[in-house]
Length: 120
Image (cartoon, rainbow, N blue to C red; front, side, top):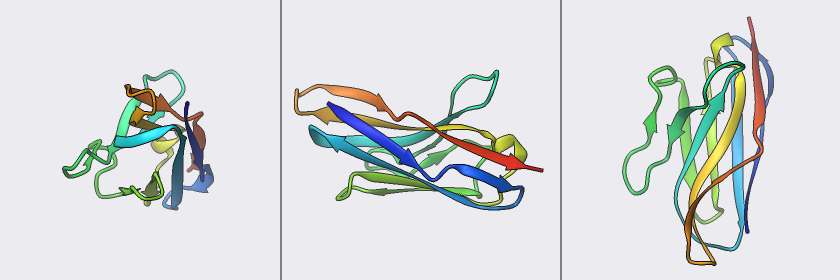
């Protein structure tokens, strides 16, 4: 089994910053990629940032220049530094990882989500 645990969400005023972290644990051989998604009320889940698998990170147009994704392979962690937050960034943020598990299966795993609320 593989678990992803997020932390760092909360309430912040517009223009503020938050840092989300996600730690992977369990039967992991290797992690191909780690990413952050978000889902706002009444909207579909959308990709925010993807650390990539050996290539440059990619970002949603709406967060480019404000958010930065970082990955620590040794610690099996990914962070999302969010600066210049806007009310439209309010959503539940989910960590996602593509993992080769001890069962020799490449699968997608999700964290439980962490709420980010930006007040105007």
